[in-house]
Length: 430
Image (cartoon, rainbow, N blue to C red):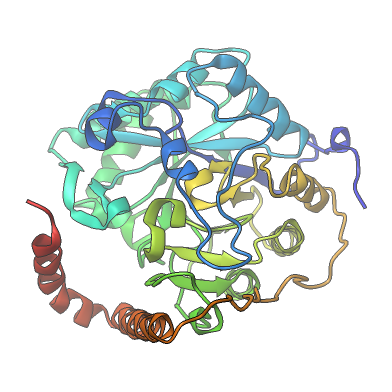
């Protein structure tokens, strides 16, 4: 059962606002030309994806918007129109700032200068080093966060005109800023003090600082922030991995989990601190970027997503916090297999599921899709091919189990890091 998209209650202030994370890497830049090859955009990763087992929904390819270039204003305006039509209340743009140097900034700057782009927005400072993580060389830094002494003041001064934009999202009347990795700030308490004092001194008033709960961080208060925001699938406990139940086409060192397992973990998760904004994702599969090292979440279907989002909205509405946001990861993370934008697998179904959940249409009482793909037996098998497959499979399985064991032991992971880097260096071509 569907309802018309025009019935979205965008003016109902009692509902949590739905904010979708927005990636701007869909246009060529000099940096990406240099690092990855001429003409590289996020579509380069998306289109090279391939299925790794029977029933694996790869590649994710766009339908309505096509392989767009975010330098085209008509694309941005159409995205906004569709997002609002289906109940999205705002975008959260990743902001790439390195001691005054910005990258991937043109789509955001164009939006800021365009009065027809009338979508509320906020920022998430992506304050981490850019590395070659996508091709298993995370130690190779492409552009580093230096955290120079003057960076705190220069950064907040650059943001003030953005905070003053009438479209900028506020929480309890305060401009809302997410920092992706607050644990990387050399002195977080000093940084937030500089930011707050400057905003007060110029008459802007208070700001709301939100720490992303990523890479093991689950406590925003210790950094002096006002709130936290979940970032699934970050901070998983790596339980209920189902690699052993999948017949892969080739060796796979990544992780396969069920959507319902992950979603329920986040629905059940409790925090010691008082204000953590909830986040859901429609689906997840980042093998387009990382290949056999990726995380594949099975059954990221519109129905499962609708149930997760509906349950989250109901949960948030029972909380005591007055001004609530729910984040969706993401509007257009195509290479991570998480996007609300229409694709060739599901069309508008994820968008419709968003609207269904927001409008209170509670069609589902549980996660409905929890099955496993069933591989068909391949013909013309030979003894040596089978033996080779068995060896490769068990070697990959052993390596995967070892990897998960190390992940659960941070001290062991730290001790093995020099050895891993040495191995990678030896494997790197001259």
